[in-house]
Image (tube, rainbow, N blue to C red):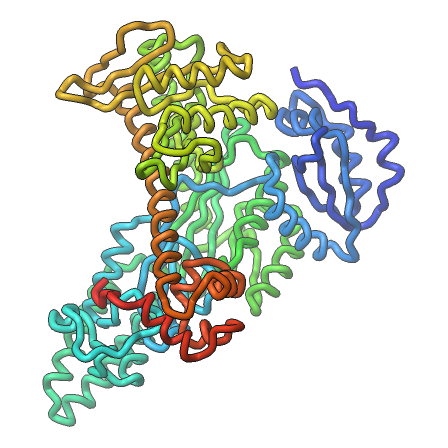
Length: 613
């Protein structure tokens, strides 16, 4: 049973003012466990002293670890809301709602800030002046949208931000997939008209676009330009077919987000339906295993976290299934961020209630899917325990992979799976500091010693550590644990790649012969998935390191760019990647570079760039 904290609320509360502000709950090590805000700090904090352990399991668990509470008084409750959001982003406290989706949903991005804009896919929304649309819950639907828009409005597809003039256009132009602005085949006004049309489609304003194109078709026909009229006719027909497929759920044409909320025991699921111009454009769902607070408090924190993210799209209206604790205050804050009114409403009748019911159904489905996955994981975990002879169910599994190129640019990559799912917050890259030359065993020993030493200090160990390799790698892991005096604290296993058709081999401490499972065994396939993920994670960083070294080497080959100027460029622009992306003008303003050398640097770094992408 969770015991109540030794923190003395009786002594602390009289020192807390009855004013708005933020409080930070910290553990013995000074780590921030929870950040909250309050209209009156003393009243809010006094409620924690009355927590019922049986009814508030996670809150009681939080309070059992609290050794210090820091308060920050603000002038207004809105200032407290903004400060709370900032502090949560800074500290990412363990007990606050951190929204993690099972997927990273793609977005469509129109680079309107560029002279010759492009339509691209991205997974991050940043403040760069571009227009973002989505997220798309179905990547296949998103790629279908891209293909559709490219066929109607052939914008350029090359990756470069600043378009370089070319003597002849690329293959995409010859195939009718690009208007070749790089070769002067299209004027700026005509190109920007295509960009505007793409934006109108993505905004859901197909009907408006159809009317405009119909008017232009009639003008082209009247001018006897039948080729242009036929092209416009084909675009109109394609847009009309798209309009027939769109699921319009509201005639008002506004942007709305509709939040569904479902609870099952301690778990909560939240689903957000995105309605743009009256049509459903996508959804995003979150699962919260055991959030702190009542349902209205959890709802408000979800809204604060989701819409507090930088660059997050803000609709005109947010529909909730029930009231949160600070809806008017939250609406005021979001309206300031949007630069226009954001309304938060809890409708009781009419079409908006039907939208809420749809969102609630999606939230319930998240719980059903989670329960199904948990049941599947339970069966798989029991299979793992039996196949490997483990002393307990391996709820948390980590895997280490070492990647290097002849001993150079060596990195250790640690991935983590919890309850059968990737836990990317626990992924780690380790640089190799004490080993020179290609010695994988020594590198693995260094990384494991650091991982286990930190885990021992923070009481943060996996149930099972999987190493990529056979008896030798397993022996290194056993030695690392023994050196720290925890040989039995973590279960170990090695997985060796298949050789000569013998099948994948699993190794366990104290067992002479390997364990060979059926190649279709769910246990084996799961362990292979973890091993391959560790390899992928390592290779990704390794490629970045090699690319960085190659770019650094390339920079040093430019006449007039020595060590001093290279350091100036890095200090001013921040990274080798940023140097490679900089324009001639941006390079020229760096102290000690100037226009002539900037042009040389830019030309050297961009020689050989392909125009097709």
